[in-house]
Each structure stands twice: as structure tokens, then as C-alpha cells.
Amino acid sequence: MLPRFGWTRLSLLYPAIVLFAAGSGLLLKQDVIFTLMLSNGNYSPTVVQMAGMFMMVLSAFVWQTLRCGWAEMYLWTIWLRLFMAGCFVWFFQQTGDPFFLCILIVLTVGISLTLLGIRADRDTRKSVGYRLCDSVRNPFD
Image (tube, rainbow, N blue to C red; front, top):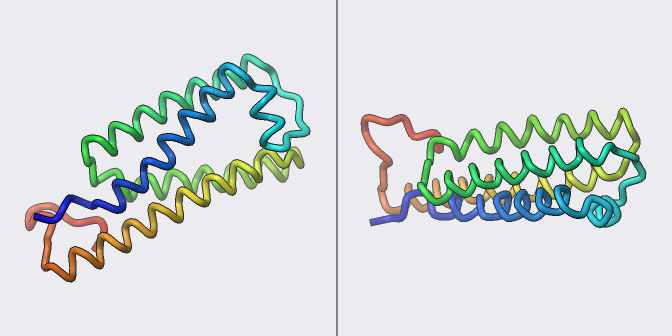
């Protein structure tokens, strides 16, 4: 039997790992992260640590979505990241800090990987005649 959304599921490894790594960095070593991400802003350490904490929690949620094969959330990960991308563009316009453009690039890579995964899985399912379930609307068709 065909694995349930193999490439799409695999593409969620990227945001899970990036969120965990960046969240850990923001929680423990903000100066290093801000230097790597070309930041020219000055942010409150506590707010940055709180953002890191939220990123680590979000990473755990993405990991569980991946681990459990919660296919209904795959498309939502695209919409949520598109919302985040819009916010990062807005933040950059407000501050002029390249930090937000760097985050936007990382986010765009993740969105692209998931879209490619959705496309590859859709093509694979069509070629083998695989259907998710007659009683459940398939969000990828």
C-alpha cells in the first residue's frame, strides 16, 4: 500500500528542525542568532526568549503532525506559513531589519518543499489509483 502522503509528510521535517534550532538559539543564545540572521535591531531579551519558547512549542506540534501523519493539517501548514510570511514582510517594512528577510527566506524554502511534496504525492496517488477515503474529502485533490 502507498504510504500516506509520503513526500508531504517528509517535507515537514524541515520546519520542525528549523523551528527547534531557531527556538533553542533564541531562547539560549540570542546574540548568535541575531548575528547569523544579519539583524540590526535591538530587541528585549525576554521577548526574544519568549519567541524562542513559542518556536520550540510549535516545533513539537509540527513534529507530532509529522509523526502521527495528521494529513488534514498538511494544507493548513501552508496557509499558516503564508500568513507568517506576510507578517515578516510587514515587520521588515516597519523596522528595515534584514533579520525578517532572512526568516522570510527560510520560511519560503519550507513552503516550497511542502508544496512540492503535495504535488509529488498527488501525482503518485493518481498514477497508482490510490484514494484517501471515500468518506473523507481529500484536501490534495
